[in-house]
Length: 332
Ligand code: NAD
Image (cartoon, rainbow, N blue to C red; front, side, top):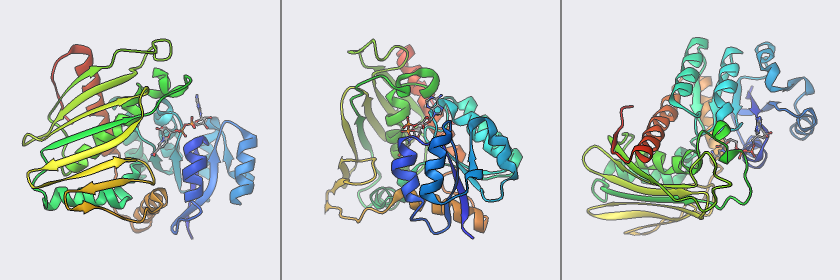
């Protein structure tokens, strides 16, 4: 049988990406939901053909323990609730996929990892770009050094937030665009550094043009990561400009993600040897199938909780660097 997935949190990412992707998966299928709205749960049960008994609320997650239809809980709630929901899923004996950022803080990441270990369940983070052909080519170039070892990386990611939502609320989001969007550049730069974390960071917050919207989180931030061996990544992220770019350069060439660098489709990617043209796959379907296959064959995921935790260590370092104006060493 296919493994059963329950999506926890039925917002935009679940309804526009993960639900539809679960119609394309080979090794898993949508078998339940965790939602604050019973009506929404019933609509999903009709659309996806799972029994209404498999609709849970955030308060009844412990009862998942008695439900054999569900093997995996995929946590897709606001960042500040990931720890609570991932830990509840692990305690109910379910394998866990947790969306990015893994949690608001490193301490919460540690609590999720410990809960999954104690419950002997697998844990993965929703870093879907590991299954994207352009990003796989980036990792191949980094490993095989076609352009020499990459020395200079740049990234820019942002969108214009029109009205204040949970993403600009520190309790629910953990921070501003760095948590939500900058994390893609951080993760991508570590991929480009062959999975190694930076040794130090510096950062400056952008002046606020909308202080009424960004009361307790940054509106935008610039930062630089220094990698072992001297490579650097200089980046910015903002909720007041739109961008989605990444570039890595070595002594013998470059790869440049010119548009939609970190999204699902429409990527425009050039290299010093010419443009790349891959057919975009369904990243989310591949990602969920790979995790299901890890469970079925008892192998380790390539995207364990430790990678989510590493990125939070870097993010906490960047916030500290911006707050103090000092270079902050990163110890993962
Ligand atoms: P969203 O606002 O569309 O949905 C959030 C869901 O959580 C809603 O259904 C909401 O009802 C529910 N929720 C439960 N408790 C809540 C509370 N106290 N306050 C507010 N909402 C609450 O957000 P989204 O875009 O679906 O993002 C959800 C998560 O998925 C975030 O962690 C985000 O970073 C992540 N995400 C990842 C990707 C990706 O490409 N990997 C893309 C988008 C979002």
